[in-house]
Image (cartoon, rainbow, N blue to C red; front, side, top):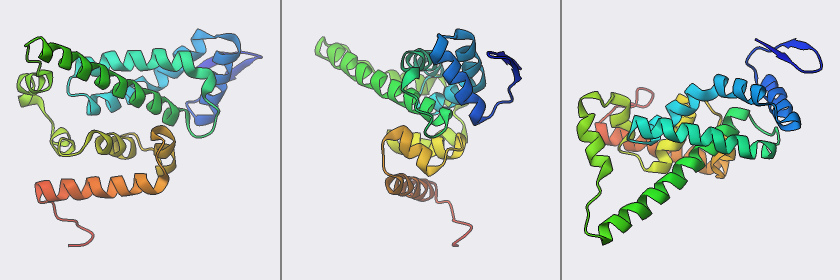
Length: 195
């Protein structure tokens, strides 16, 4: 792929090139540069949100919303840490905001005498398609699930996860350890390293 700016530059998908595209998008509101960033990272963001949200359609909607938020906040990316780490922070924040809105919506419906149980409905509709990974992640809290997905599925470092979630690195490490222990305990999985 070639990106045209001060001259034609061949751009493999690297972190430095992400920063170049961010700078180009911010400096001149270059939607093509931002489009390339989306192309590079959309599957990772979508997969991250699919592991957090019970509904793949909701995750796809959240992914689009996260990229809109990212475009609006692009100038706040300082270049500290990886762009994908920053982008996953935006996606995670988008997910949390949607959950808060969903809870408020459910409370309003409940007050009106309606029962809204979207999560159980989506699990029953898709119960045959729930993967082993989804079953493992289901025993974790929302925060543990997000951090485990960032670490193992997205390959972020503890520092990048800390940047994305606003948590200290030591807390990230503790959450990952606790999450692995919960999964081992819940599914009686033996630790090959220790037993």
